[in-house]
Length: 68
Image 1: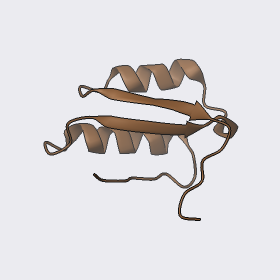
Image 2 (image 1 turned 90 degrees about the vertical axis):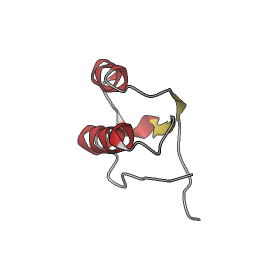
Image 3 (image 1 turned 135 degrees about the vertical axis):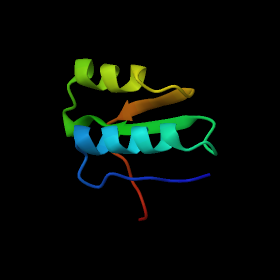
């Protein structure tokens, strides 16, 4: 299991992480945990998610605790 984190919570960061994981032949699927406070535009995020070729699942949460 690999964990990649965009600490800035930007759409561009999400795009970069999705593309990196999608291009890695060792990754078979992706779990995406997003934070509602990031105010992502759902339409933009849907476009990014649909561009992924690997299985994808996850959710949007009010907050995410990482490393403490």
